[in-house]
Image (cartoon, rainbow, N blue to C red; front, side, top):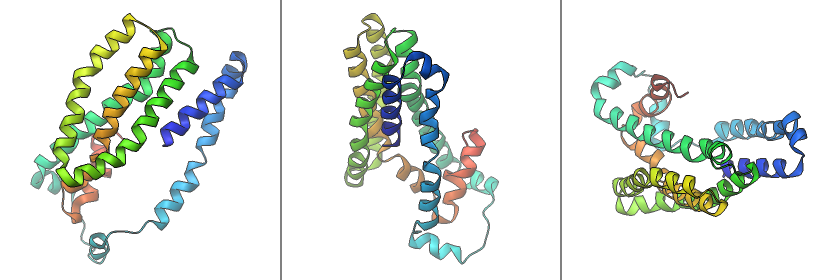
Length: 217
């Protein structure tokens, strides 16, 4: 939803100002509005309720060493690295590179690129909780595999197809397809990461330290 809001605000700015005004100063407007998320994030973090498992562990001040976690949970860390890689690459290709691709390679206006991205995100957003709930019923692995494999198989052909026929409609179709598959993948993603580890080392393994190790934070 945050990505969709960003795309819509950017689309509004590009349509509301002349190219000179946009390049001169108006491009800063989405970034200024983005600062508003800071207080919201701080409020959520300070008022978020912990699960019972973490409340119990709070009384135990024992620290978990990262290298010990690597030694005892190497397989689980490898799974997390693979999942993070798939999610990160997909995110950058679909949501960050696509507007640049539309402008520089397809020679479409920025407003068309943002419209296509907004529609794709509108499809993606409701699929995240839906596939997260579905994974509770049928398991995480079937969802992840059924989303990631089609994405890997369709991404390159879709790029070739859109490049050969550079129209807004084709770009829109590609965005909807890839964003939908990404939404299905993201549905169980965070839960899968957490479920790889017991509660006492969960933050050490699947959050801050892993991200730092991979250079993603």
